[in-house]
Structures are given as structure tokens and as C-alpha cells.
Amino acid sequence: MADIQSIFSRRLDPAWSRGEPSALLPDWTARHADLQAVSVEVAAASEAFVAALAAAPDAATVQAVRNAALSRENGAFTEALAMVPTLPVEEKRVLGRALNLGKQLIEAAEKARREALERLREDVGELDVTLPGRRPWRRRPHVLAQVRDELLDLFHGLGFSVYTSPEVELDRYNFGKLNFAPDHPARDAHDTYFVNPDVVLRTHTSPGWVRAMEERQPPLRLVFPGRVYRAEAVDASHMDQFHQIDGLAVGRNVSMADLKATLNTFARAIYRRDVPTRIIPIYFPFVEPGVQMDVQCATCAGSGRVQDEAGERRCPVCKGTKWVEVLGAGMVHPNVFRTVGYDPEQVTGFAFGMGLERIAMGRHGIHEIRQFLENDVRFLEQF
Ligand code: DAH
Image (tube, rainbow, N blue to C red):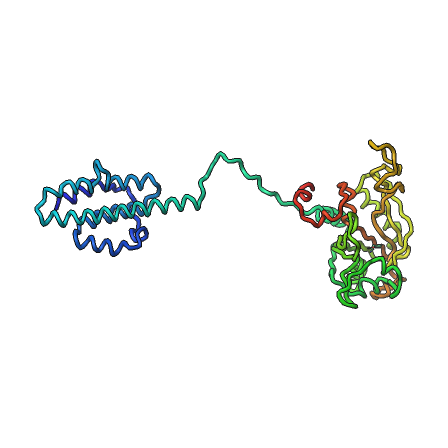
């Protein structure tokens, strides 16, 4: 049998890695033991081939190992089987049986290894370097966050810090402490969502001032960004939630001139360097005097008329008024100071409040307010 061993060892390539046969063939242990009981040499040779198959990294190596064992021309088993007829009867029987068992083991191992490699290939997916690349989705802040951050940055430069207050607010803070009389019609304009009779979804960001002033002592310079809610009928220019930024400056001798200078600085930074502005009186319960700031309409350049294919007509943006309203403002009402425990004889203050959607819509020519909340990337990726 010595030449059997040399037939096998000539065909075993020392470069092959050795894997674990039982990982490839679940019934390896039993089948190997059966073979070993017949021929130790053939069992050892079969184990070497099966181990090489178990570690074969690709189909070409599987083929090479298989050929070394079983190829018709020069496979080790083929050559060994050719010797069998020359042996004495008893040896013939034993070796023939051993070689057949070994062949079956190697064939089974080859099949198992090919299948395992195929599964691996499907899992990983073949890399096709000719496929066009996938463009990565680049993140960016929401257009309203961009406007908010720009404003916070601007006011930061004017000495204002950020103060945040709750979206679910006490009715007292949203209205009472801001000098809304219990039955004053100004409350109606706010179309309030009530959580219960004492709690509302805030209808504006102004309640933040009251919280800040109750907590801190003057001088104060704060901005109050956030989401607000109103039970409005929803259409292209109204939503029942939107965003505001209020501002508040309190100290000794804070004047209307400070307010005007602050608002003009804001308007020139956000609109155009030379945009004409105007301030006209308007009522808000929490300021006295209360004003509205308008900027000249950019669509009609302050003429009130536009010219297009359809001819000359009234400007659709300012409705012919030449101005667009951008914010409410005023000098903090003495009653509000009293409510928070400030002495209106000692301190004065100005405040302002603006809507972010309106600014974003004016700046980008957005005509549909609902788009801000729809999260359609075709809209969002434009800004
Ligand atoms: N809070 C008001 C609103 O939502 C806007 C406003 C007006 C805010 C005047 C102010 C202000 O700070 O001074 O309608």
C-alpha cells in the first residue's frame, strides 16, 4: 500500500489552505469514521482533499482540488483505482471499497463548497464598476430653519440672546399677563386651540417675554423663536401652525428710536440694503404705542402696479397698497411691566414679533404656505 500513499501525496498541493471538513459536510464525522475503518491511508488522503475544499476561496480553487483528486486523466483516485485489478483478491475488495467511499466524500464536499460560494456571492452582490454612481442625498436645514438661524444670527449681533418658552402655554401667559382683558375682542383674533380652560397652544411667541421677565431682572435683550398655533381655516396663505420670532429689549431709557433703529437694521439685512420702511400705528394689548412695520413691496417696487403678458394691473402681492406688512412692534405696556413686578417708572422697553413663513415666502416667491410642512424633497431641496 506504500505506493497508494505516494499517489495521494503527489497530488496534494502544500499551498492549499486547510478548512474544517465538518463545517462543509454535516455528516463528516460518521462518514470519515466508516472510511477509516476500511483504510486509514485513504481516509487521511480524503480528509486532506476535503479540508482543502472547505477552505477553497473561489470556484477555480474548488476545481483545482477536485481535479487533483478525481480528474479522469491524472486524478489521484483515478490512478489508485487503476491499480486495484492488479491486487490480490482480499486487498482488491478493501481498497476498492475505500476508494469509492473517499470519492463520494470528495464529490459531496465539492458540491457543498460550490453552493456555499454561490450563496456568498449573492449576499455580497457582485460589484459592477461600470454602474453609474448613486448621488448621495446631502442634508440641509429646512428653509424655515435657515430663515430662523439667519435672524438669530442678526439679532445676536445686536446683543439679543435666545430664550425659549413652552408651546403648550397657560392661558394667563398667552393672554392675561400680556394685558388682554378677559373679554377683549383681541382674543378672538387669535383663534385659540384650548387644551383645557386654563391651558392653550400658544398663539404667539410673546408669552416668552413674561416668563423671561418674571425670571430675570432688567436690562434684558432677548429673542423668542418658536412654533405657534391658531385654529385657522387652512388655505394657501394660512396654516394652523406657523413660526414666529419675538424680540424684547428692556432697560432704562429704552426708546422708540431704539426700536426704529433695530427694525431698520433688521429690514436692511433681511430685505435690501436700501429698502424703504414705514411704521404705522396699530393696536396690540401688550404694547403702547403699538405699531406695524411695512417694507416697500418688492414685486411692484412700490408702484402698486405690475406689467406682464396680461397687461398692466394691480400688484397681486401688495394688492396695490405699495407696502407689505412684516411685523408688529411697540413699546412694552406698563401693565405688562407691573404684572412681572417691574416698575414702569424705572424701566421702559420695546418689543417686536414677526412670522417666519411670511419672510421665507416673500424672499423665495413661495405662494403656498402648506409646502413648509409637507416635507416634499422636491420643495425642500430648492433652498
Ligand atoms: N404677538 C403678536 C401676534 O402674534 C405680534 C406682536 C406684535 C409681537 C407686537 C410683538 C409686538 O412683540 O410688540 O400677532
